[in-house]
Length: 439
Image (cartoon, rainbow, N blue to C red; front, top):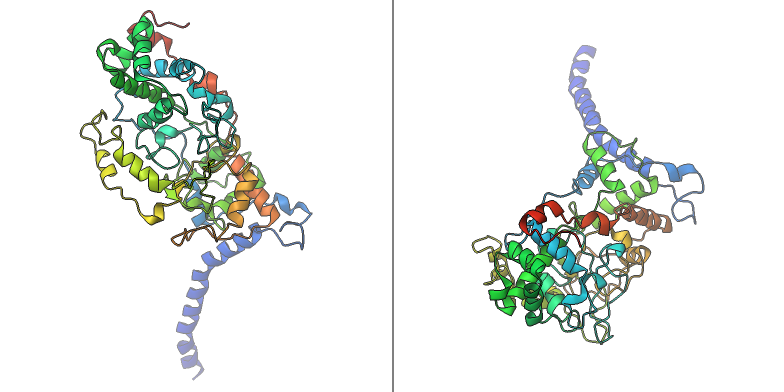
């Protein structure tokens, strides 16, 4: 009798053992989360006064996968098939010189670098830049780091190529206000510029229309701007160590930044929009910021941007794109504005973010702490009826806010942008235009 009872019990014992074994991975993940979570302290921002601040997170497999998606860096170059000047030595050389030369502007005092200064991570440090008449423009100056990697350009995505994006401030009367006839004269009268332009565009500016030369200058500028790839950061070293299969314990990466990274890919849900190696999926969202422009008008954001890019003769489907048969031409035709696009703006990349304050499309956040505060406790009343489901209060502790900022700061690295990025490639240029040596 006892034997038969033991035999009947054995299947139940096997099942119980199997359940216990299956629960081990879940238990390990749970223990990891408990170990990594800072203890509550009743007033210390979620962190005690002791050495718990130095405890490194232990990553779950899901967290590790999310972290690895933010690399590797630098990215693989994406050639702009719509710009024949892209990738040419002469175009990069001429574009770099024109970028810093105010001669392109109508008054001879404004250059591209006036708003996109290399010492400010290719931005200007202002909430909104001032127009030539002294009044503020509508939106914050975006950084030009990695801009050649974007699918849609501008806060509203009103351009679908880098050279079309360059045309907007170049020709806008409020900004540089360049005149096509003046650009033709500049490219024609100087033998050195004329040679570089021909080598870049395969056309002689002297026999081209002023409008064609204006487009050529924009393509040359874009050929240079497209080379502005931000440097590797301490985050990249940490991420790559994780990718190699280790725990990255030997990488000099701040513990506070590691905890902030856990919030970024977990509780904060930041990775859902700030995804990929550039920390942006490149699309548009209403995040609950004010709609008003400097003059009090409503800024429709992506709603107007779709109309702008569709009507732009310089878009990828237009007659002036050099990609006559590319698949990218079809994307514009599928765009349609809807109510959900109202007040939506492009998700910016976060690389070099520490040096590009103030933030948001209107420059209304003075620092990273203000950005974090907005997402931590957003204004739900500001979101329209089709608002973003992802925008919800996070209720972070002060310590968690600090950790998240510590992480964001590791996405930046010191640069000597003007010296390291502007590669004039003199030997290649001298072979094309012997008179185009260094000034």
